[in-house]
Structures are given as structure tokens and as C-alpha cells.
Length: 359
Image 1 (cartoon, helix red, strand yellow):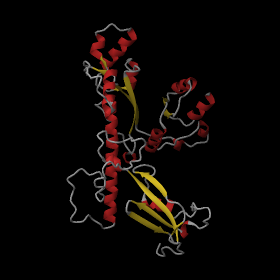
Image 2 (image 1 turned 90 degrees about the vertical axis):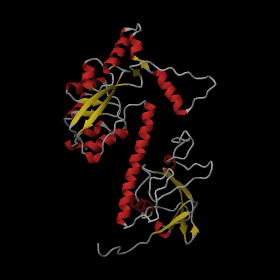
Image 3 (image 1 turned 135 degrees about the vertical axis):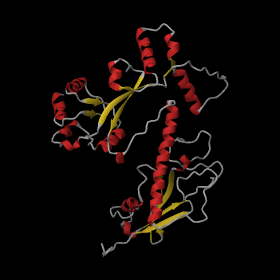
Image 4 (image 1 turned 45 degrees about the vertical axis):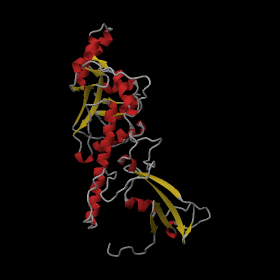
């Protein structure tokens, strides 16, 4: 263990982020060297931190050997902040909600009732006779209140108790163009999850609007003079797309499983239009070469690629083979057809000896 930790020390890091747990012996060695350790970091979060700090994610500690110092990331400030878990602790009394046993409670309403039942009133608990460890937790919750405390101070003063405090790692001073973090506070955890979902959609929609505007300007295009902003709620994040009203009892495919992301009210929302189903067909000499294939693309995901990348991967990739075993022709000898609703796009590829003599 000491040999493995010594490999890390050669890089002279100040902070170490690990995706899983670290042995007690290694933790003690890192503590002696004054190296901050953060365990159980999710892979997606690790990738985002690496992007913003310029660090390199290593899949194994064996890869530390012979690594240059350039694999280390840099930030201006690293600190811990502590908040009271307000989903559990409240200062006032609990509001009792009377429910009829015959009433059915579903969805977010059931989650909100469970949150109320799990909450603890600081004032009510202090008036009771509690064991010493429970009373210390209640006193820590009252001391924290709605304030934000430095993580080191919370540990030193004994306020960082399990079940009372939520501790967050703050990495500050990274280049702004590489990303940022938005902190949502002031509501219950189920409510914040819904707000986070809406905020993420708005960010994606704003980015899509920016790209669409740039594309129209580059093509010297503009909206028709007769275009007007619809007075009814629009389910599209594009100025040029209008989904209209769907048929009765028909919901568009939104890329989720088992109805996830659907509106509780049952109405069609913009979240129901964040995916598309297309049918792709390989054609040779106006003859269908193989069975049609249905593909689903979720917007703003890894499946959602730019037009240039799509053409490079699906149309210009000469290594692609037809799914028909008896067909020996390449992608150049085929026509690709993509169908959605009543629209169709036919793509044919030709090899050019001199694509552009001026380049």
C-alpha cells in the first residue's frame, strides 16, 4: 500500500478524487502528507471536474507511473461548505395533514407527505427528554439554522454530524468557458429535482436556439414575414417547428422507459417532444436491399450529433456494410432513405477524384 501511495506522492497533488473507497492505511498516509481525499465520486461528475480543471482521469493506480505532471488539474480554490439538511430538520412545528383512508394519493403528493412525516422539529425535540447523542444532533441542527458554514469549521466545532449536515465540495476558479455549477436551494428534495429537470431543459433549449439562429444567419435565411408567435403554449424549442396538437389519446415517444418524464396531469408538454423516431432504409437501384430499421434519437444526449458528424459516420463511412448478407456492395452503391411521418430524405454518395480544386 505504501508503494502505491508513494507513486501518487511523486505527482505532488493537493486533492485526490477517487471513484470508490480507499483503504484506511492509505487514508492515514494521505492525511500525513496533507492531501485532501474525496471518495465515491460518480464517473460522470469525475469527467466534468476533469474537463473544468484540465486533469486526466486514470482508470487504475498502476497508470500513475511515468505520468507527467501535466495530468494534474488546477483550480484557484478548493473548499468544503456545510448546510443543514432542511429535508429532515425544521425550526418550527410540524403541520399535521389529515387524510381520509379512502383517499388515494399518488405521484408527487405521496412524496411530499412522506417528506413531512420524516421531518424533525428542532423546538419540539428540545422540549423532550432525549439520549445524549440525539440531543447533540438536535443542538447542532439549531446552531446551523439556515446559515452556510465552512466544512472545516463544522468538523472542528462538532456540528458536522451524520444526518444533520449536508457537506458539498466547492471547486472554484476554473475557466468560465468550460462550465459552471448552478446551486438550487429553498425547497424540498423532490421539488428541487423537478426544478433541476426544467432548468436543464431550458439550458438545452437556449443552446439549441443559439445554434439555430447562427445557422439561419449563415444561410442568409429568415423567418417568413407572415410568421407570428403562437398564442397557445408551444411544445417546440425551435422557431421553425410546430408540432401542432396530437391525435386524441396519442402521446409522442419521448425516449423514456415505462412513462418516465410524463406530466402528472396527462397533458402533452415540451418534454414529450425531446426525441424522434426515424426509419432508415438501404436502397439499391430503387429496390429495398434489407428490412427497414427504426431508430430512436433522444435530443441533447450522446445520440444527438451534428449534421456533419452524422454524414461522416452514417453516409461517408466506407467501412459500413449492408445488413443483407448476399449484398457485397459498399455504402457508395446504396441510397440511404430516412423517413419520419410524411417526410423523407434520400442521400446518395459519390466518390470524387478532385472534390474541390481550390482547396
